[in-house]
Length: 260
Image (cartoon, rainbow, N blue to C red; front, side, top):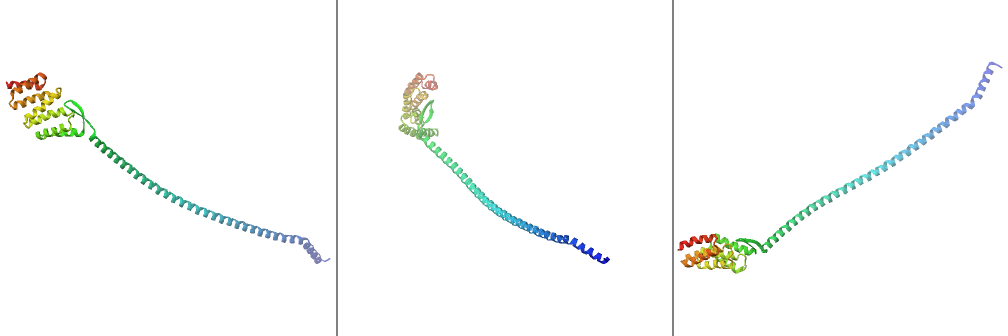
């Protein structure tokens, strides 16, 4: 065998030995490519699924956000309505308070008016010459008006007012005072004959009246003015005898001395 023959044989043997290994390498590359393609496909599917899931989640979130916005808008609307209702209620409450206050003032004014009108008809406690009694409002008013005329020096008007008072209120607690001041009113207008019966009526009906001694002295003065000195002395004697410690009795004594 030649050298060339030996080389060709060695090459053939080498091909025979390495042929199965080369074929096996080719098969491994195909499987790897298929595995890579399969892996890529699965990865794409997974990414697609994730994108779809993310899109779904985004859509859900968008829907939830939209619902939340609507809910917030509804809530804001309800809050505005509540604020408006509260403001309206506050306004109504304030108006109600004003109405109540106005009603209370009206009731108070009405009550005061009624009380004032009632007081015009209710008897009042008065005191004249140390004597206390109940007098009707009109009774007191007429007496006060007559006394006001007397103080102004309107003796004729005072006499007329006191006579009218006697006729209207014959049993009045003012009766004794009316007699005394009626005598003075007549005396002031120089009607001494009319003055004497008024003063005498007081002494006769109310001898314990604190003005009775003064009434007797006034009678004596009227009698002096009428030039009836004898009657004046008798009246002064009565005064001194009946009311010896009175100031009028002391004045009567001085008056009596001038009559002698």
